[in-house]
Length: 74
Image (cartoon, rainbow, N blue to C red; front, side, top):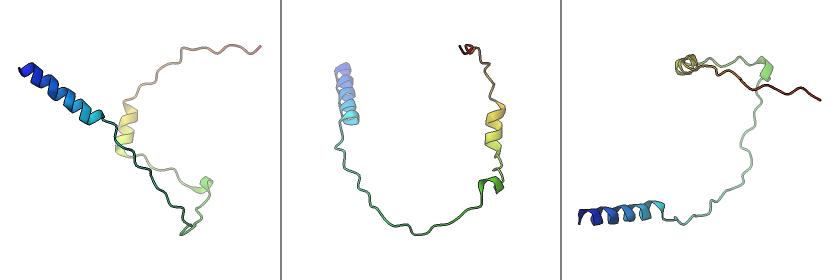
């Protein structure tokens, strides 16, 4: 009895979760620009500083050696 109830509940749950939901059309509106601005040239920009978590993430990464060799041209 418990097995049948569990199977029924599982099937009902899957039907609810995976039932195709009616996709509503996404509407978009075309508008004119509100403001335009000019930034400094890219060559004059300073690079962003890395935060603590990015530094920590890159310290724990290991480089995997490339074992593939390229074929000579010709």
